[in-house]
Length: 353
Image 1: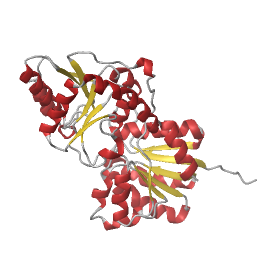
Image 2: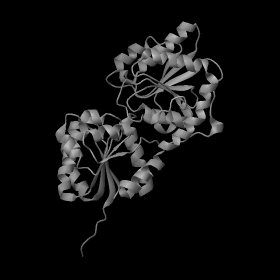
Image 3: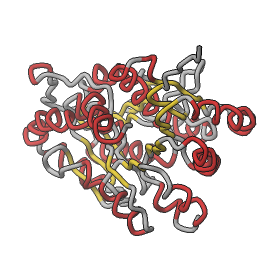
Image 4: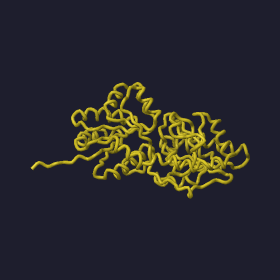
């Protein structure tokens, strides 16, 4: 008697870092999407391939992919720069035998610029059933490259959105600020430190304190140690916060600073965390800023790379406390748009086979 195998609904190819405590945006989003799909489809319907390990793992993955594709209905790949150059052509090649649905969920806003001069990679990705980008800005930029398989799938978080009666309001100085991202030069951490130090020095008092949270980039430890060595008493590094504990920490802050120097950010998870905590943001205007931040509703933005405008924003919120506190309720409303349950439910209904 012939044995019948039921195909799993989906396999996710992404950076899990099994066995390690990795808190970068790539790993966190991969785990959040996986967990939500397991909730909605059932764990037995979801398989996983961990790309952590780099080149050492490539040979193993080449043999693993066709076996996996034979036994699933959908592949969702979630790798970044190096990963798509490896996986996209392989998946397209093997799919000429298996004819399943291929999906690419993009993390961050870098893809359109990355693809500009990579015609072969573009051809492979155009054969996917769907490429899911975080913002409308990214969708438009991909369509300019000739893509017709682009859909918007915002970044999402497994959120505990505060209730209005849980909001924490600032009443007087010092106003508590924080950064909540990977600790690296490109996230503008040094700009945040310098801005707080400059304002406090100018007024001769502690107008702001700054707490820095996040994983220190392993390639930039010397830079951060040097930066830490000149911290005043108003600046502190607070270490790591598990991604499911973020609202409990963030709710106590007056504002989140997001002085990124990555112009091609997508929808940063840290801003979603801030909204869920009822914390307005002060942010550099990266490429997709307007897709996520409504100015004077949930925070303020300043011209990308303009340090003097960052200083001006901090001055404004130090003088307009009541107005800034009113934004807290607006943040809670915005947070609901980015819940993992809501976004992945739509993804399943619209795109999965």
